[in-house]
Image 1 (cartoon, rainbow, N blue to C red):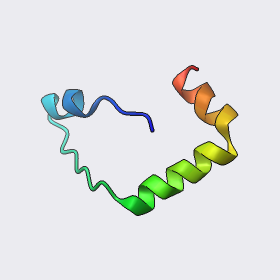
Image 2: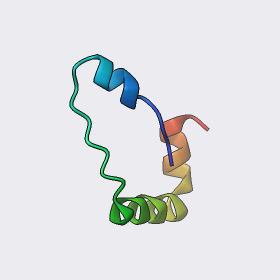
Image 3: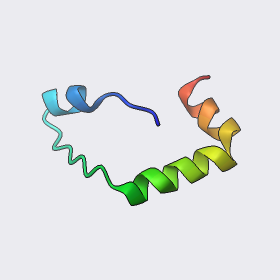
Image 4: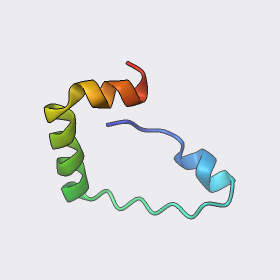
Length: 45
């Protein structure tokens, strides 16, 4: 999945909670597998 920006957000006062939720990982992984064209469009690949 796409990683990045957490340190920057925290440095700018945003409270980031990284739950490392397997449910979230599975949900996003399923979306990426079903819609790679949308995922790649968003991250510029």
